[in-house]
Length: 87
Image 1 (cartoon, rainbow, N blue to C red):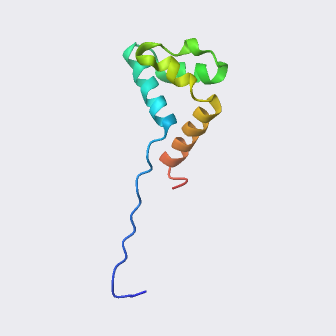
Image 2 (cartoon, rainbow, N blue to C red; image 1 turned 120 degrees about the vertical axis):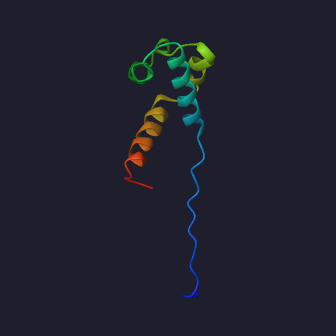
C-alpha cells in the first residue's frame, strides 16, 4: 500500500430487483386509476386478495408473481436503507 496516493472507494447503486420493478409498476398503475396505492398494496399484502390491485397495465398479474413475504421484505429493506441504518 502506498500512503502517498489517495484510494478511491466507489459504491455502486444497487440494481433494481424484480420486486422493486413490480412494486413500482403496481404503484404507478394504482395511481393512474385514482386509487391510494399505499392502502391498496397494504390491503393486498395483508389479505392476499388480488382484487386490491387494479388490472390496469397488468398490475394484478405482475404482483401475483411475487410472494407477499418478498414484497414485505423489499419494503422493509427500502425503509431501513432510506433511514441510513444499513448500507
